[in-house]
Length: 288
Image 1 (cartoon, rainbow, N blue to C red):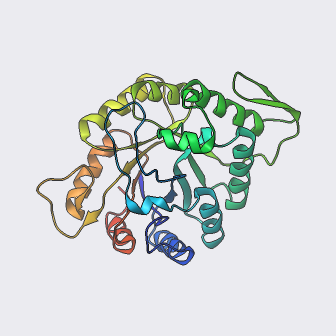
Image 2: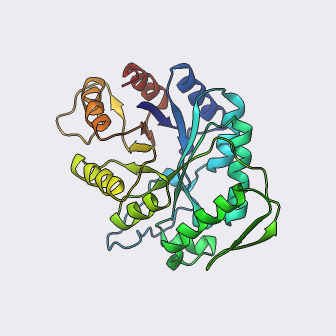
């Protein structure tokens, strides 16, 4: 198991220089990966698919650097650290377009890409992308299958319910691409496992994380497990905290627990926090 950090791709302090500075600091510190994510828009009235609860997005999420362009830039400024997304909403991109972009980035980075794919959750983003919400689920599975067809031998041909690719040559082909599926609900976890994807998931509490991993493994999931922490490591111990947050000492104890669940990588997403300090504290944890 190794450790990583989300790049500062949003907020008033972000810039190309800041993104590269954090990526290079993470590489020097020996971290395993740096990560981006996708956000198309910040709606005036946020709404979460399938839930009655309205969840407002942070103000800084009105502007988020595109994940793949960001990682292409970082790939040119680093040499060894892995580059990941958690996650790209696959349904917002035509399969042949996204397949070519991912394969190109895989080639340019020397096979360092870990790509987390999700099916999207926000109604307004589906509207902005011109994609029906009902395409979630089966449409996501078919999207992954269509991209894999693009990465297979030429001539490529794919015919499905939602997507069609005429017999063609499609390139480039990836060499070291690792695919993860972003999921938390049981049906989504089973789908990710059935597709042969690794799993990337956010930890909110230990019971939920344990159930998530168990559902994925019971469904046959054998891929890498990436755990995202929406929080930071601080200077002082906390009496009340979520998993993998608090002081360095508290997080070190938690890492043994998440390692026992079979995690391959843990990352902290420092939205609104000091990325420099977080890189240093992650490095203090060493390699669990």
